[in-house]
Image 1 (spheres, rainbow, N blue to C red):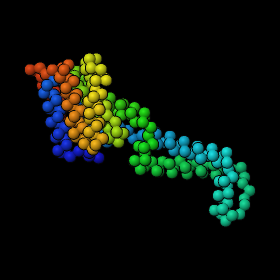
Image 2: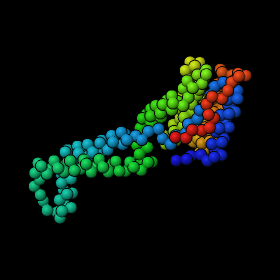
Image 3: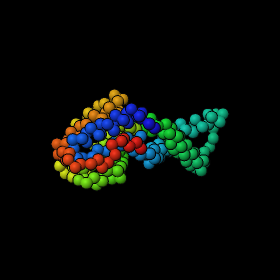
Image 4: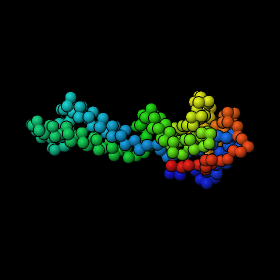
Length: 224
């Protein structure tokens, strides 16, 4: 899914170019639709719902049996142990499949994912993207990645070790806050540009641009 048009991509690239004009640091921006498929979370919800229904049936079978009797014409029925077991299993399977099915609707699926799980998956994916696209790919190990994951409404700023050893993680909080403030209002490109500006300001204080500095990483936005 494309979240930005060409003008938005150009705005982000120009913000990176401008921010890097004052620092030897290199800024990489990544815009992701999502950071994970969360199949395991969907399965856990389905399994939990199935076991809940099966447990409720085991504890209070009579309402289920009366409902079934009414569906077949209201005739009473003597249930055997095998039939009761089959009903429990059938209810569990139906519930499992229904819960999996409704989670195919993306807004509901992501609403059911716990916040800590989203944060952890976004962080892990940001680190993976950083290792592939930026880590130790500059002469002075001065790469920084701004990673934005749209479905989770989460962002990460990941830096090379030479930067992380000097700049505490808390320093990136202002950049993150400024960026997300714009993005919450629907201004994705503008938010990224603000975050890039703030990151560039921090980098310029600790890693000013040298006369022989060259651009080692692409300024364009990476969309995944």
